[in-house]
Amino acid sequence: MPYDPSAFPPFAVTVDLVVLTVRRHALCALAVRRGEPPFQGRWALPGGFVRADEDLAQAAARELTEETGLCAHDPNAPVQDNGAHLEQLATYGDPKRDPRMRVVSVAHLALAPDLPAPRPGGDANSARWAPVEELLQQGGYGRDGEQAAPLAFDHAQILADGVERARSKIEYSSLATAFCPAEFTVGELRRVYEAVWGVALDPRNFHRKVTGTPGFLVPTGGTTTRQGGRPAQLFRAGGATLLNPPMLRPEV
Amino acid sequence: MPYDPSAFPPFAVTVDLVVLTVRRHALCALAVRRGEPPFQGRWALPGGFVRADEDLAQAAARELTEETGLCAHDPNAPVQDNGAHLEQLATYGDPKRDPRMRVVSVAHLALAPDLPAPRPGGDANSARWAPVEELLQQGGYGRDGEQAAPLAFDHAQILADGVERARSKIEYSSLATAFCPAEFTVGELRRVYEAVWGVALDPRNFHRKVTGTPGFLVPTGGTTTRQGGRPAQLFRAGGATLLNPPMLRPEV
DNA sequence: GTGTTTATCGTCAAGCAGACGACTATGATC
DNA sequence: GATCATAGTCGTCTGCTTGACGATAAACAC
Image (cartoon, chains in turn green, yellow, cyan, orange):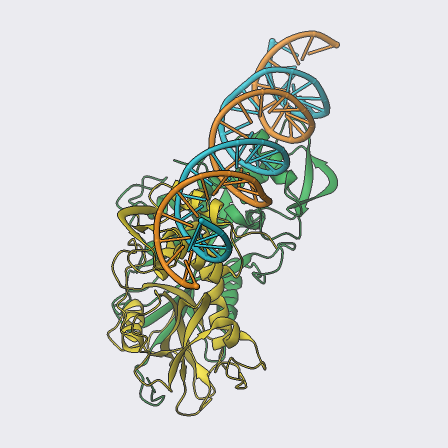
């Protein structure tokens, strides 16, 4: 259909971020408390308007830096420095998803290591890392006994989609290393998989699998004992981004 | 960041469609010829503006029907009737992707069986099925010796992303059946895989794999001989949407 | 009938995954 | 310092899946 560029319905375009990390053996997402209506006082995903001269990925990277101080990676580059992995997730555009106006939100997924200085936003009361299970259970009670209100807007759906993307993507890519610091052990990587998938994995088979996949892990030569027990070799993420064959989630 | 809903940059939002089918053993995409600037006379992906009261998926389904006469499926439902599979692909929002104004395009991917009545748009000169290889090779020559100009806007990138999505998705899902008519043979399904991946597959191993995956194929009892040779059993798509274990592309 | 084409069944070896035993190297505890 | 608990690392075995490929079956063309 030939279209008339001068007569189009006006939209606002935002980016929303699903920022995931692994803390205390649990998959956690960054949530911010809304200070104004609609959904005032409720938790929501961080996000904001795309600026007039800004690409979508740029806008997402900017929001990520504003909220967490992390800098974003190119999604096609191997995970090497201390930046976070950032990729587009999906776009949500139900006409009624924002009661004020027509807003189309391009959601992005960010994977970050557990931050040494967890300063989400700076204001401890307005942002927090929350286990995704807690954010997604509707009507349940949070860790503090606080009534867990559902996330604002359609953010529960967005978060669920982001979590599912992360869960499936670590199957066939080396993205799980994005949850780890620059140097990490096989055990730490395994605990990432266990937290993201919510299962227990056999340490011996996991070790065989990840060390046997060429390009996945590169030994740095060092060892660490920060987990207790026998010292473990330290690794960096290798250049491989795709795991072949993939590491499939256990059934059921 | 708290945002002010009354002060936002205005965007136009469109949907663009990557409609794929398999014709004559080749993966083909629907292309339309642009009748007006910019990129007048060049080939482009079908698409159009999202209306003010329309969801993104609705807009994509409407465009698909307008361009092909196909009706769209729910992406989570098994492929059963004569509709096409439709899912969101990705969103493209570079500030300069449309020279006229700021346009954010939510690309969708549609997979359709080879249409008995290929009436793309109705105007034979303004729409056609073209092999994706031809649409993506820049500066080459098409089948008619016609200079193959690159697709308009960033549509070559969108098409490439859609093709890659289709290629990877038939690995671990039953989506390849979306390219087949309601009843099909194992050989027809194999030719779909061969066309989409651009490889040759062993008929015996393929047969073993697809008939051995529970829920993938349901025999209808009938047979056909439309491909020549020994009559083949007819199947319908089963209820399974995820193949476990997946059918991985051959390496290299 | 002979040849051609496609479908379908079977066989075999290589590779990989899950279950699990065994040993090692550290810190904690008595 | 001996013992224990913890975590890491190396092997073994078994069953399943895959890739390569032989063999047979059922249609059509001549």
